[in-house]
Image (cartoon, rainbow, N blue to C red; front, top):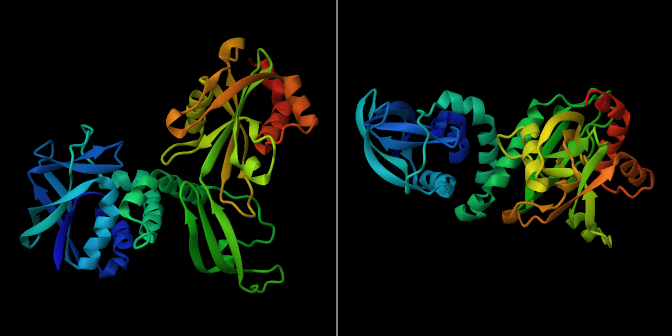
Length: 376
């Protein structure tokens, strides 16, 4: 059996429970501290790293004993994507000093001049990390730690979408039914890479009040996305982008290059508004002055988790603003174009706007255009 000292996120017992795969009450742990070290915050407090000496000169944590070889394997798997090694150090508990293994970064990390706080981390990142950890540990014995590390940005983005869903006020349900009226027997991940596909075996309540028979349903597991139509109220025109899209190609559409608003994934820890400003820079090189809410809605609730935050963004759109942009590391190749408001509505009225968020944003703009122009 092995004893370990956790000074960072694994001090959070709900997370440790997920990683070890057992109930919190089954984990033997005690408060402990490591003298001569400080846990500094890294990457806006997302996790800490130990530095010898430092401001605090003591790192608070928990001492966990009785860890089996299987426990250690699960812990190493979870920490595998973080490039950590293990050191053996003496820690202090209420019962005296104990030797314990401690995860230590193999390479020096740039840290902030701020002592890491578990309480702050739980408030900012706890719920998201628990969702991400459930997905990570779901791959234990299926994918390597290196594979999971490569997929981790999308894992965190999917986790952020779950946290957003739990916090949002949903649309009305006249029936009064909610998630408690669904009984899920099993969920199987059929595919995962950039996106994921899950198969569910479940029953849901019928409108006669009885639970229906078990059915199998597949769902495309995506992230939340922001969509933003730039509008210049002084020049009365919008900016649209064109890029290659897989959906039309896979459907057999002969024009897979699509005209659409600026759009992109909302990253973990990022608000929809911040994502809109970032994507405006990345995809068109423009700066937004203000954002106006158009809609917050599911893209295709029958088969996808994808959720859209749609905005019209006020921007300065001179003639020379257009060009080719995109994030090279994401293989983006995006060209921007300017359309007068009348030309935009001609696309909509002529059924040449075949991108749903574009149609929705254009119709919102048609309703609110005069108000926006009056205050420009």
